[in-house]
Image (cartoon, rainbow over all chains, first blue to last red; front, side, top):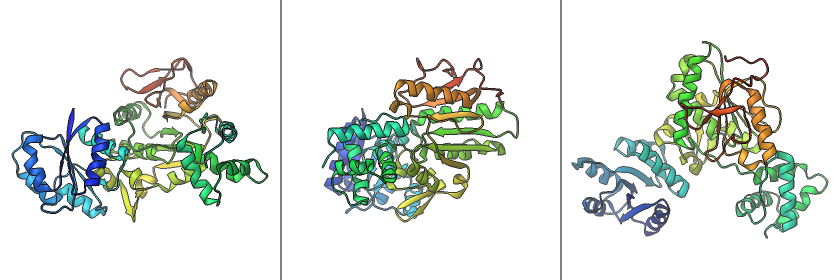
Length: 121
Length: 280
């Protein structure tokens, strides 16, 4: 079973993502910000991280920078999932090391499709 | 208010008469949801009234809009991505076999709003290096005129653009226009579209590859056989036919066989040469 860490300060978004990911046979863990996500990384060892951009304590870009500094045997794939829709923001996220990008709001087909893309890469 | 049974039967008959497709409209919430849009545009609140207006004098335009709404136009970029890998290899294989300078022709039959044929254009432009300058003709056809209009425009909303399309490709080949994303002119120039019913004679000329994915499943058996015969007539010998993942030619046509080296592609048999066509 593949694993996904959902990092979002919105409980509603985490709940929606969890609901969809369960139908896609993912095992899910959740974090409310980047710092909490970093603390969870060792325990959860996710295949994929679904990452929000704007969060309190530690945002998505800062989390990504921290993730890049870690010495991991297998780096999880990072899918930004955010309301930042501008192409410049998308480019910034990719340049910072994101593997894929989802513009919120999203639905099951979008999430499924993006997870398939990162799994095949 | 939902569709009554008599109205649902009438709608099903209308769609089949116009397109050959058998679509069960009774109790189909997706269909009712799409019809809701047509009703709103005409200030109607009752589905039976909508169906009544179709059969009333002057209802032809409405009937066309309703048929468009009932048809399942679901599609997305690089649908069944593994199949696209094989399609890319098959296109390269055809390119290597036909005379230099001759146009390589591909037809997406039932192209809906264009995501499949634009995926092919993108594949050729990006992964196949434009086939080294070989002329390529990409034709997308669909029975729905509104789908064809959208395909020609090549503009997709946030949900459509994200389905199946890797984000790097989106940035490279699409322009952001407010909330939507539009295919770059270079890619649009590679593709042309026209309205066409699969049960009618195929577009003129011969094709090296035909894609008709997740369309024939809506046709009753004899119509499927007729469509496959038309595809055979329109393909060069050893040309390729791609159907949807759950669709097959088995028991419907003896003019194709599974292409051994290209999973998901049927090879057109040379024992059935379409008129005087030759490879090339």
